[in-house]
Every structure is written in C-alpha cells, then in structure tokens.
Length: 99
Image 1 (cartoon, helix red, strand yellow):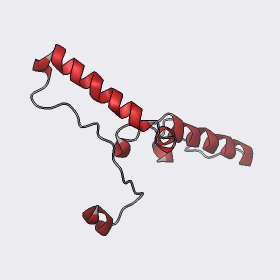
Image 2 (cartoon, one colour; image 1 turned 90 degrees about the horizontal axis):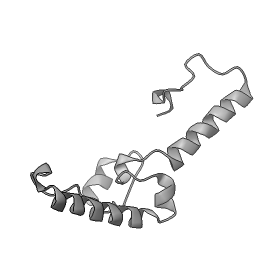
Image 3 (cartoon, helix red, strand yellow; image 1 turned 60 degrees about the vertical axis):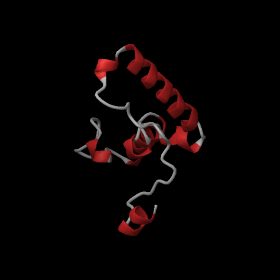
Image 4 (tube, one colour; image 1 turned 30 degrees about the vertical axis):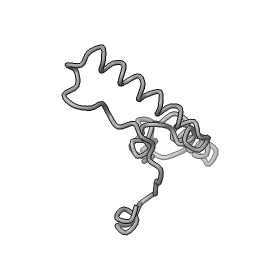
C-alpha cells in the first residue's frame, strides 16, 4: 500500500528520522483520511470509533433523496450502504465462506 502513494520515496530516505516522519504521515492518512472500500468507504478511525453507523445511515438518506429527485439516474437500487460487520486482513477461503 505504501508504494502506491504519490509521495512514496522511491529513492529512499536520507536518515531514520525522515523515514519515521514519512511513515507517521502515511499511517495518519491511511487511518484518518483514506476511505476504505472494504468497509463501505469510511475511514478505519471512523469505524473504530463507531462513527461509521451514522455515516452509513446518512449516506442511505442522501442517496434515496437524490434518487427521488432524479430517478432516471438510477436503473435499479442505490448503492448498498449497509455496514459490513466482519472485516479481515488477508482472509482465507474458510473465513469468506463461513461468514
């Protein structure tokens, strides 16, 4: 994930302090700014703090209102904004099949 960031230092770091600063910046962005597709486009921090419930409910309302205003925009239902309850890093096949 790190190497796909636009500011990834492909030429390396000049010293340990620069490396630590970059990693801290990356981790902050990844957890507090980046919206993850695997958890319905909320940040890990919002999910960890339980704020994702309200965010996802609000998205449902916004999408339904938009659909009522302009129904031709959708050929079917709006996006599913239901909370994904179980999330794994690198799930194995048994986890995916049993949940």
